[in-house]
Image (cartoon, rainbow, N blue to C red; front, side):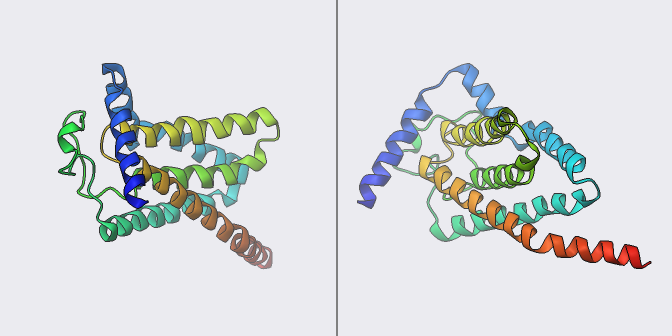
Length: 204
């Protein structure tokens, strides 16, 4: 059964990797670079400051904590599973089309891009959706975070031939789980932290 699934995984990889154009090469290469999304990160930062005000610093810190978890956990899994990237896999590497001859590190499962992006999107959604007081605002937030951001990044990783579909799929699951757990941590401990801080301010 596992061999059948991995066979489908390779077939889907090659289907996506070969369905290409010069325009998509440029766009999806850019999308795959983290600096391309700096404007999105800045917008989320601004919204956190706007809605959480003096508490924003703690929620911003959450994203750095989350990044540590998502990045290190995905690297840990890579180094233990040791699944070769498509562009390093002897069986298919000659069939994989690379853009700018970029292949990346040796191992591919799970995708750190997918884990990091989904973790960020999940935490941002959970922290900001409460302030989207209209349905269209929640819909727009979801489209930007999970559609434009997460989907285009994970699709680009397969398109560029550096990850299998299963790599990015499992990476998104891991990222969503970690993003949700970090959010639960904030919901449980931040009220106590802020209450303690405000109590000290009142006593002074």
